[in-house]
Image 1 (tube, rainbow, N blue to C red):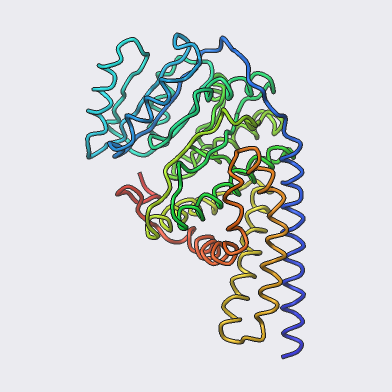
Image 2: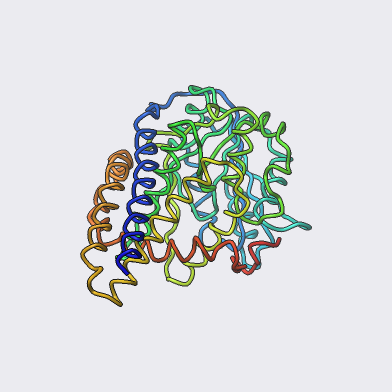
Length: 380
């Protein structure tokens, strides 16, 4: 038993050191990112919104894009209705009719389904030099297009990842989501800062249309319903070099998405996110995901063991505190940038909860075929 305990302690220490090393690199990457002040541009832009059953959100989304400070003659909005069974299409059509001076078009998928197919359809008709992708449940800062475009131009990038936050989270459950969301966006940004991009968010990203047309569709994993963001970023990095991937470190580039309202949908979303992990081929992405999964698995094991044997409680508390100290600098830096410092107070109590569900979704996601918006995520 003593030998087994010693082995477990050594394992805990090794995993914690590995995790600390990865997070330290990512934190340093955040500080290496260039602060982008934003600037006027004459670049033409196509904003693409893939929408499925978004009748409650689509009008506000299009309105926030229409309110951009960017020259309205230099950007278009392309909404793709992905086989919606509600009034998404008719609401979009009504918006277009009421704003005839704006360059907005609605496309309807008639054959293939899924976000990746919707994006391919939109890209086949896009006229902008720079493409911006966002989701139908998102709202955007008025300087969003300008901030993303200026990052693209100033850093000579082919792909730009942008910041995302939850829109007015209320209650403890949504505030916990917001804290986790902050950590994901900050980690993705920091990984770009050190030259090993591992993560981006499909609610806010942009890229060169000319560069996109040089990519192989096979690299985008069209057989997977999820992963339109990370596989797209990885394809650009592989083709043009990791130094051509940028992050828009400008608060005006912020996009706001709706929080999940219940635990069931929250878990389904996380399972959908992790379902694509078995298709990862990029070593930095695999190692980063592995460090997070192992750290959370160790902490989850300690929590469960402490319930069975109270003698493990001091060690469990110690690991929770150590992980919090590891996570805090990156989250603090990102919260200052995004103006979300008020959510940091829940970091310590959130650590065990995040560890438990992250371990479950990380291990189960690649094997559980869940539904999202009425579809199996591994199918169309």
